[in-house]
Image (cartoon, rainbow, N blue to C red):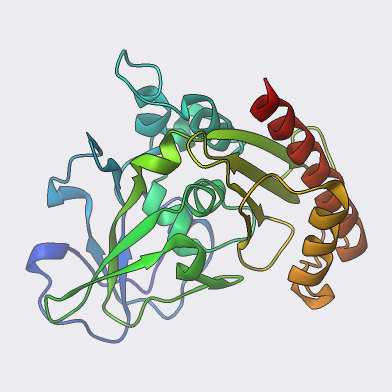
Length: 274
């Protein structure tokens, strides 16, 4: 897409004060995919020099400019880290070519805030924390599950940008189960659920994305019974929270959410018992 209203592309660090018509530019795969008539200037984050991925005893910090390819490749390296398979599954949920993987960024996927955004699913499921930098140089942190507020909307205020997402070490050590549904074998995610159970205290967390307008988390002290989990899903997700678009009707999304929730519960219950 030729963004013919854009008059300048400047390095983010040299852009000065935020002004109407500005937008942050990372990979640009969404930004350049459709008309953006309101834009006049792009503030490019590509040259900020952030390390894409930093693994510490406290967790995994993923820079907003980290590409999907870099994240996927990171899981194949010989370093101690659990959740390799879950990260790989979320990367694969993009259903995009290697060209997109090499350009699209983790931060861009979060900030676009589409229900099917798999980096939102990954971050919310593992209690990821977003680091936001404010126009006045301040910092604030927000859970991924709260960062996304609706379809295409986030908690960002004008001039603020996402610096990184950190996945905490305790969540990385959990056992996880992944389920994804779509109308087509290679279609956009219409339902994406991730469950995890903590090997230390036995707690269970179910995160629902793609079928809902924003991430929904259900937490339990232990793996619940089928009846308790089903009721929790029914009570925790009002009918109006299910997405209604060409990728699936709300009733179908709700049905699959319940089916996948039980599959995840069964899988993790069996793992805990082994």
